[in-house]
Image (cartoon, rainbow, N blue to C red; front, top):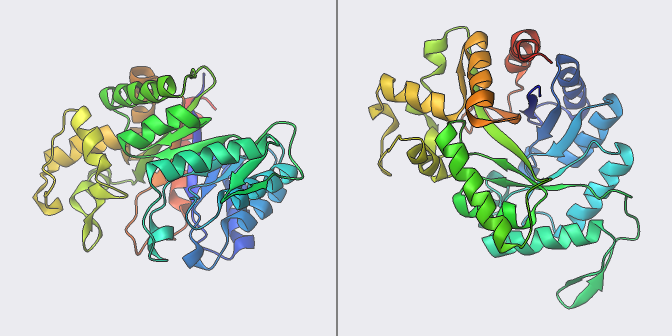
Length: 330
């Protein structure tokens, strides 16, 4: 099976221009595009995805990632069905606890229980079932023959378990190392057993931090940088990155300072976490991820700082379209 490649695209341009950029991602050979749900950007992800749907024909489109804090689960279910009407079979609803979006309105991330109840409610709504919110029964008047699949974006081990318990699939930030992938799969199975379900039709997509650069050595210096002044890159979006690195045999103290990470350590971290290097090096790392870890689909997450999070990933699209995706056999 040829590995599928999705990519994260920000609303870093006016939405019509972002939709055109997404069309270029389809032309480059990507399987899907996820767009962040950041209301503070002043641009809406669902309107952007609707415009992108009209400019594409095969690309899977989804928010990456929406959350049940800034948007009520009933609203999210309605949005998912609306996109499904525009692009049947090409939509997934990807839901996480929130990070920048919730932080920018002074709210905490959604708890495990909030996530559980939100996903269960949305799955029922999209099947046409009645749901009770705050003592009031409600249902969607219009639904699709095939409900939009709901994926969880999961970074921490407990969120990975919850994905196995209640979701249709998961975008997991656990790295590419075979030991961390195996540990994540065990967590998914724990959740599935808790939910009394199997994972036969469950879809795993691996969030893959990526820096493609003609100077491979420079690309592998990202672990030595800061996401923002009070948060190392390796703790973005949470400290859970350190948990999965430990599963891969890399044990960093919780209070590490990025500048103290040696070049040798940085190389090992980059190899465990994602794709860092020249286009050819990234291609070889993806091939290895497929053979060593059985990975069939990745979500390319271009590395960035908080200040640079809205820069369009034109360089990554070019590298994947010209070298990496053709090299995988797509």
